[in-house]
Length: 271
Image (tube, rainbow, N blue to C red):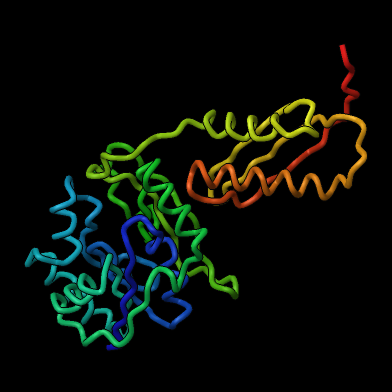
C-alpha cells in the first residue's frame, strides 16, 4: 500500500482541500479525524468531531479505541485500498495513525502549505476562530446529524480539473468547539464604510454589501466629489488596495473581491 501524510495545524483547511489533493496525486482513500473515506465516500469509522471534548476527539482521531480501530482495518482489507492519505496536525500524529492501523511506512510527507495558499490558510483560520466551523470531506447525507446540536449544513461539491465529481463536503460545529468569537455582519460593513468615507474623493457611501460564503467579497456603492481631475481608474484601484489593507489588518485575511460601483458625482459646495 502507498501511504502518504498531509499535516498542518488545526483550522488551516486540510479537510477542505483533501479530496482535490488526493485526486491530484492519485490516492483513492483518506484517513481524516477517525474516518476512512474511499473515493469521496465514508466507508468506516467514527468522526472525532462527534466527541464532546478535545481530549476524546484526539483519542478518536488516532484510533485508541480497539473496536473503532479494528472496524477501519477490516474496511481497508474489504475495499482493497492500495493508496491512502493520512491527515493529521503533525508528522507525529500521522505516524501514530499509520502505526495504529498497521499501514505500510509513510512514503512522503506533505504539508498544508503544499496544498493551500497563505491567503486560503489565513481565511480558514479566521473562520475557525470566529465561527467555530469544521469541514468533513464526506457527503451531507452521511453525517449523523443528531451528534451536532448547533450546526450541520451542506458544504460544496468537489470536482476535478476535468469537471469530474470526486466528492462533497459537510460543515459542522462540534460540541467541543466552544471557544470562538462571533463577529456580526454589521462590523464588517461599518469598517468598510469608514474606510471609504475617509477618502477625499468620496462624497457619500451609499451602500455596503458584504458576503462571506465560499468567497469573501464586498460590493460598495459610492458618490464621488467633483471635480474629477484625476485618473478615475487609478484612484479606484488605490481605494481597493486601501480597503484590502485595512480589512487584512483588522481581520487577518484578505477579501477575495472588492466591487466598487459609482452611482453619481456631487459638487461639494462651500457653505
